[in-house]
Length: 636
Ligand code: FEO
Ligand code: CA
Ligand code: CA
Image (cartoon, rainbow, N blue to C red; front, side, top):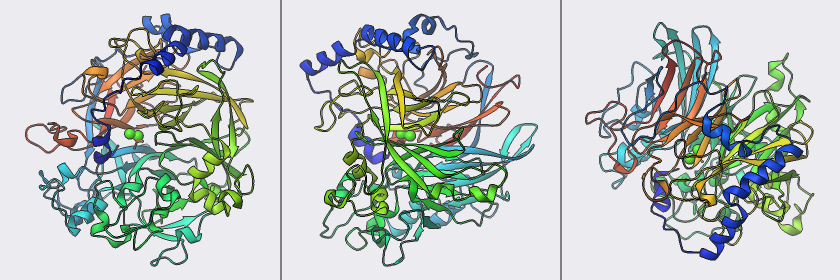
């Protein structure tokens, strides 16, 4: 969530729509919800439906969850359960190299400094073990907060300031070394690297070279400078990292006359940027001069972290939209499947299936598996009575099929991928409440996706309530899950239900806004965002929600991370973050004894945090390293 978007999000009053709200409450009352899920449980794919297990959830009987719940917090601290400890691994501005300046409070560092420092607003990350005492941690740097990055708080931007902002986003590759105190970042480590908004990269896959990707600087449409707004991530079994470009629309704009195409409008691109002001100092972000530059962002980028000289590759076969994460799994058939969310109100969930199969014996042969395959988008069917479960299907986005034809404005497979959102609408995809991370269970063919919130549900013309998105003006969010019909991630169809509806049972009694039956006064939260499984199948849930602690959010405190048992539905809070932060980014070591968790934008909008160093220090996004005092496995 960018600093600029948040202004739109905050203090959004709920219009009075009693008739509509009552309808939702009737169709998805807590009682009804329970019954629907229980009915599903017998017939369907999950042997135990969490939504039917209110008693188990309330009594805390899960054998998977072995830690004591942490209460909500409004303090400027990072709180983990008794028996656990958390240390700061690295923060925005820490130098990766010995010839780079240390972080200076109050915005004193230059753009050149930032190029050699850890980027800002760390988000998704992956841990790549090299040997027992060496690893690579690759971390996304999603955006930056001008109010913290510059003494002028973004009010007097210069070209140098824009260069610094560009240097602060992208990806940080960190060499980690393990010693008696645990893992630490090695300054000047052999893998250390910054990838940013001006790093040269290539474009590959079906859209490479398309006219929509051609610019004056790159008439062939196959080389591009940089990546930015890198939200969440993925990793491949062939040792590469996937970084996902999310809110890229907000960096483009123009002070000149400019014509916005319907496709640009669908991607949120217009003459006014989101406040970044890059187009005023860096011409390639000026839509009037370079109308195609914006089409070169909104992709998944593959990076080889073991080779600091490697060129990142934008994989166009995975489609262009506001990518959240890229959850990659090797299906039993050997095909690579990547699940992808498009984080926008009313957008969609996608799946890529590779044409070729993964070959574990030939790593080099896997390097371009993400270039050929089929992109699909999800349609969720539900019973007419609004039950929060049903069947679904994956609709292929193939030029020439399902109406993706010239008479509907589609001219090639490349253009279908560049305008994937338009193609998804054409084939009849289901509009969702902002799909964020997708996570695949480590042993069962089960897939979970966070739908973080959607103030437009039931309000905007194209966003009527539907089965997986059952609440109008949904400001709490939900987690959907599905299982492929035959257990293959390549299946054309699936069954789905809702794993939970976040809510506030202390504010809303007996309505859908109280949340599902596995949500109670002790574990409530809003806006699930980051999710991931550990090896044992615990589902970790991170929040990017409202932290006002009042009104609809009373008693929910700062953003947090929880842990859920997929079998019983129990949800238990594991940690709480400092003031005005988001918790995002999750990476376990293979022994499951260390977990890295991100604290993003503490003190945004000058909210008064001084995390992590306290005193009068500038608040800084940080990666935290959590271990158990007895050296045990996290979560047990
Ligand atoms: Fe970057 Fe959708 O969160
Ligand atoms: Ca978010
Ligand atoms: Ca997110």
